[in-house]
Image (tube, rainbow, N blue to C red; front, side, top):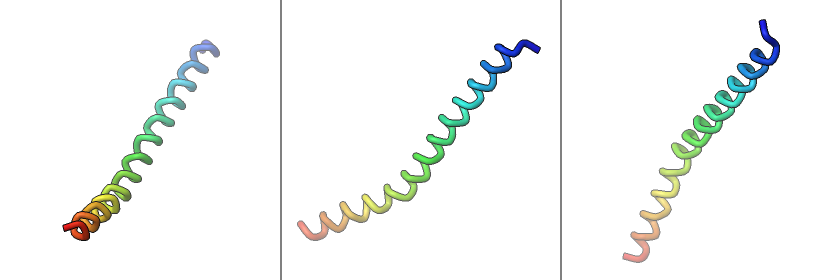
Length: 49
């Protein structure tokens, strides 16, 4: 097996894994933060109204 090709495959897999990990993390943070921000804005709206 060609070592250079194996290294390229390894690097590509690692990059894909990192991108996937970042996406899942951002999705989880969105799931956590969006309701909090929504409640904040709703409270502000209620106070102003």
